[in-house]
Amino acid sequence: MTKAELQAKLEQANKIIDGLMQQISDLHRQYTDVVTKQEFDGLLKQYEALEQRYKILQSLYDKKQTKKHNERNAGRKPKLNPELIAQIHKLKNENGMTIQAIAEQLHISVGLVHKALHTL
Image 1 (cartoon, rainbow, N blue to C red):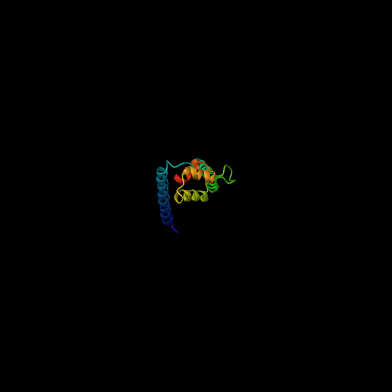
Image 2: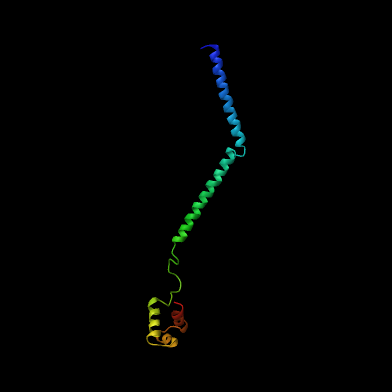
């Protein structure tokens, strides 16, 4: 290889290096607003912490949704059941009994009979 050929290859390599340096400076100017690695790592940690808290809240919400209301069946039991309501309606419609007569016959309050007839 001659000295001229080496000089040509060297110039070609310099052109390639100059082009790459120009691309680097263009990229540097283009991405000056990009966060640093430390800032990125901090944001990533915050994101992971938020994601973890979200998963915890989601699992609590799912448990709340699947939990049956009044699981122990605690509290006062309702006096009006479907059979009693049907019986009240039957006495009122078929026998034409008054609300007070139905209450006396079934040993329940007048208000309960009224509630069964008008709201349920």
